[in-house]
Length: 116
Image 1: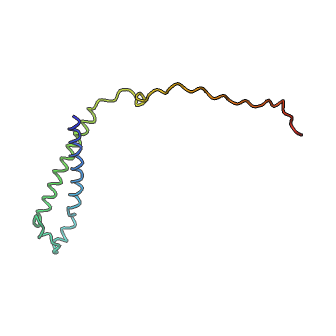
Image 2: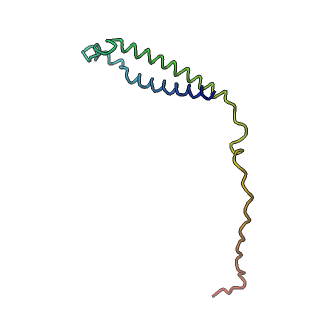
Image 3: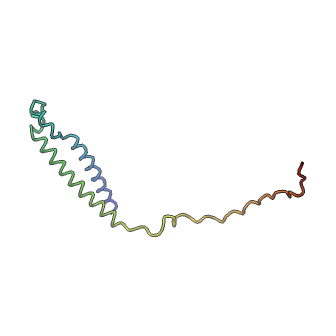
């Protein structure tokens, strides 16, 4: 069960990093006007509109994977048995307290003469 939890966590982290990367690679909606005046979008690897379709579809797939792994991690977190007792139960009991040091007594104030 722990291996499955670790695997889902790794896929979740990789999907999150992939989503961030793909969102940064995509053009904004305002980039379409710049592409009309020859910014080089027609000579890209996927064609004029192919990159937008590919990136947006792959981002949607990664978002679905991220959502599914989030649900899986939430399930594992809720199905884990609750810890019994307190955290302080695992702390060892302190040893016998040491004998207190003798408190020095103040000298009797009546035996001293107070200078005037």
